Image (cartoon, rainbow, N blue to C red; front, side, top):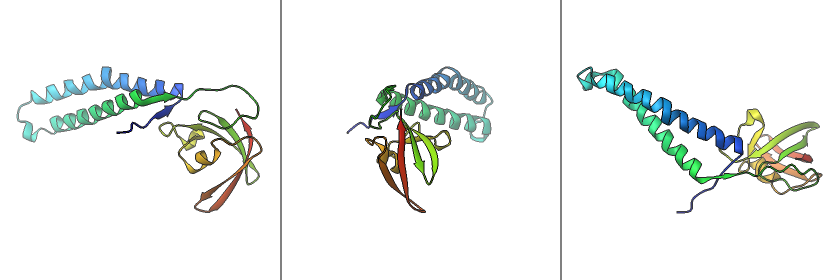
Length: 156
């Protein structure tokens, strides 16, 4: 099976590791304690607290497994701080003109993508169109409202 690489910034990887530590060292032990307390209350077939705690434990264990895989497959995006007319790649911050307005995006891996923070995935239509392009180039992206043209103003 081909293992898919998970592209993350240094901050993104640190956030995943922090979530993992929180789950393993704090939340999971708390849930195990709740399961033990609920189990001591007797009849498990009608014990809603026991059922809820077991479900939460199952969810946390699933997230821990997912985070372990993500961290194992993580590839750090190298940050570049050289100014100039270099090609857009993962980790680049790109300024574009679109319909007369200036927009700025940072190209990140899909796990860190967050449109509200102007972080777009390299797998998204805009991300794919921008990869490898340079200042001054134009890209067109199909959107539900039609084709949108972007002119690259700067790359950092």
